Length: 306
Image (tube, rainbow, N blue to C red; front, side, top):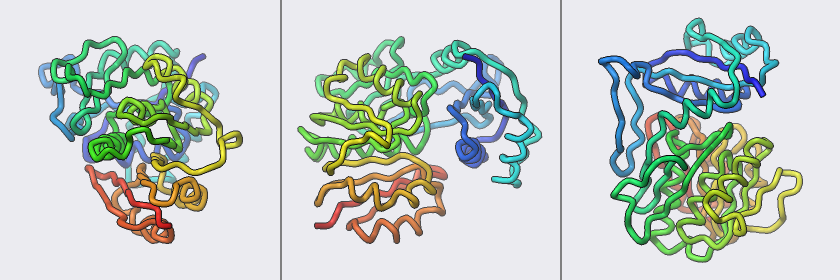
């Protein structure tokens, strides 16, 4: 199936705002590549250090939309969402699935988050540092679903899960991944010791990608995938929701109700500056709310009262 691809060049400092706007107008997927790749100015990122999510100084940002999307209407929506950005840089073309997947696979390298968690493309060799008995290795092929570990919001959540595992809080636990994308967070939780994970997303492509990645990682029997309408009732001791701040606000009652008393919650997809209303909202149910910031993005985590 073809897609409409928007491509533009931007600086590293501008990337979060561009990506936030693209997500808001319904981009199916967003990727970032080195704008100087293949030139003498190429800035190679071979293996980031622990806790690092580096980007290039000059970035080529690409986003996929449905093939029948109106490019002019998209530009109008983007300019309305953030008129301070230069959307005249954007260009459009029609692409096939394989073009997108090949570009992602060619650029993506193994990444470590925290002490034990590694996200590795399915067709890449494991780094020597990942050759340890307790390494939590997720082999990923995100397809067209968001979530490769390279975005700060995903990285913040992966490090949070790695920290829970270090404290023994994932051993045998049940985990809810609310807005699962590629399934990366649920899969990491399972690899870190969780007994079962439940993934929820309103995007059918995300549900397909999550199920495929679970099978690739041989954890399909320990993961269930649901659209919101058929999601199971109940509570979970660990819940992570990596979605936009507006959705976290609108779904606060629903998300809070899914966290068991004494359970842990992590919220991400939040731009720095958007956290205060969410801290007040979730403070109705959660104690020890903590804010972690990476670049322009924020994670909020806390413990459910009761």
